[in-house]
Length: 86
Image (cartoon, rainbow, N blue to C red; front, top):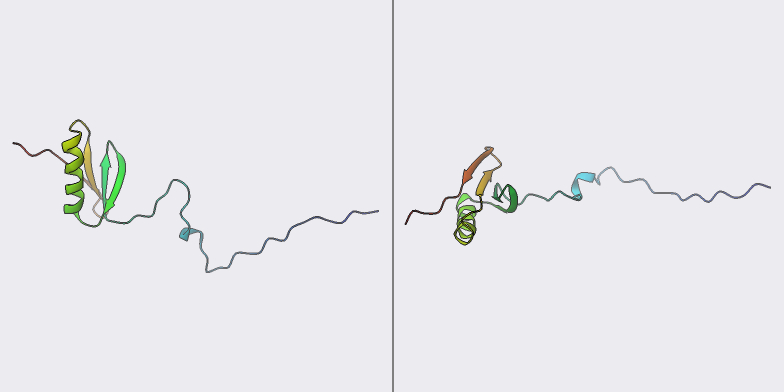
C-alpha cells in the first residue's frame, strides 16, 4: 500500500508585494540625507546639515577623543566635526 503524501501548499506571493518593502536584518530604512557617524559607525540620520552638526557637536564636547563626522549621502562627502576654539 502506498502512503498519503504529507505536503503543505504554500500560497504564492502577490506581485504587488515586493521584498524591498520589508527591511532585512542589518539594514535600516534611511530617514534623512545626513548621517551622523562616530568612529565610522552611523548613529543617526538627519534631514538638515545644521541638525546633524548640532548633535555631533554635543557628542564631540562630551567625548573629545572620538572621531565625529557627518556624511552627506546625496553628494557623497564627509565633514569632520571640530570643537570650537575657545
